[in-house]
Length: 215
Image (cartoon, rainbow, N blue to C red):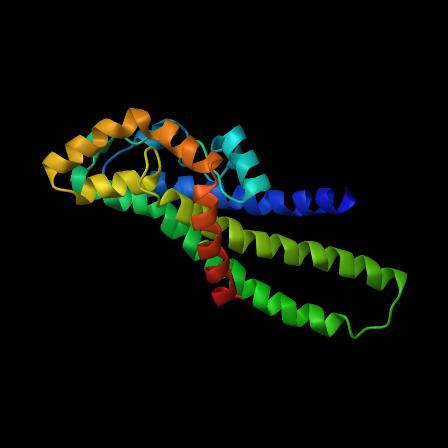
């Protein structure tokens, strides 16, 4: 029980960082490409409270995949709506992948530092330091995994995930229009994929392969 609480406490900051940068960069790129909707809605911020979706955040903590509250984007305001939709949609996953790489680099350095620390004699103070370092390593490991999972999960081409908007932006107009009409069914399809375990079976092997590659 205590171990679970320990893991959740150290995982929360990593989750907040992941969802915040994901949504912030969606809004930031949209703003740069002509759409001020996110800024006007107060979502162009690094304050995690502005981006929290309770269910999606809980999913991230418990199952390592989930979502944040989507940043509002009016694609009609973009300079080149169809093309820029791809850039805006890619911004979140790219931000998460970049964050995962940074977390992984810090984790490598921290692992070396912790190995050096363990050479010190065993004392009460030493044990406290080790507990804090263990939490720090857990935070970094979670940061790598959560950012990779959030990026890959959102690239799935099922509405309302980013992957569906990327696909719409890449398809010819006639096919993009037909695909966009499926948007109302997207959440149901996504829910079925999640509850059936299909997404987990596809997502986790990719995430942990990339985790081992980075770390």
